[in-house]
Length: 386
Image (cartoon, rainbow, N blue to C red; front, side, top):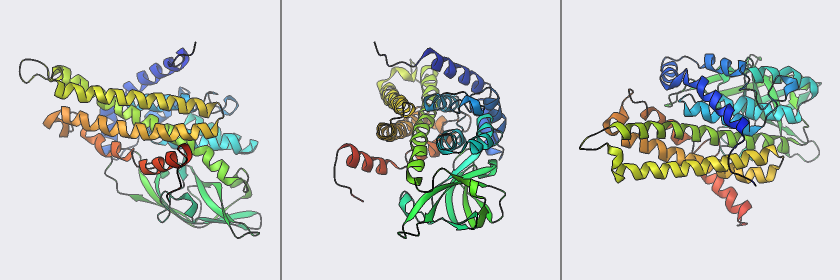
């Protein structure tokens, strides 16, 4: 008989990650962020315990698990108030792409550092003039003898200051047709011609966002990951894990906010009973819990399809999971702030700081509107609208 509960091994993984993250907690995370400090200490401890690279094959220093495992780690960290955005990028996107399409030498060079956290890899696809339309990417890679030369600009690239390398999505020109094709390159952050400028953000997070400038960045031939003629397939192989991880990140944040709100509603007494006894408070919390559990279930389905190698099925489920998780996260955080009343706006109670981060889960890494476009076209068979 099939059940809708995770394996005991996965549940134990969740317990151990939650226990570790709980020793740090939201107060520590917020202090680090507001002081301009990083969450490196927690990042490296997760790596040492084998959680960061749990989806990386064992022969390259990982745990040999799947996206479902790394998504569980991501969710439990966020649920303890310590959401690590680079988990979405380094082990999930970059780790998956290199595992699937990298050469043996590339795997041995980059995967162990991704797995233990000592060599973080960022991911750069978004461009100022392309937005959600990845077909309009203009960052170009051209051959020069044995080398590649990259030129272009990227925006909203996470954690470049903490990364040794960036997996950059560029385009090569096809001499036969003149069409531009996407290709993936590993670019060292200290490469000549590579410049990163921080973007001022309102989010309370240790991870920073950057605009990247690539001015004739010269790379060796083996910086290209995979086949230059199959770039679109390789690119999308990293986007399903990205959406699954974004969903896990959002549901973890939602769980943290909901737990804080429920705890407050149980204790806070204004008249004769705790405010949680009043339906005006209880019902929004119950609704939020239902929406959160639905999003978590779809995220687990998407991860299972992805780990089973069903890229098409996983694409649909991952988009739906990310949509549901973003909506649930915004609702949970907004409800948590409201339940706290005036206290919800204070740093002491620690929920108002989640508002911007929660709102971004509806926008990034793909907006809710683009997901609705995907479902309308690919699931419902409606005409393409854009």
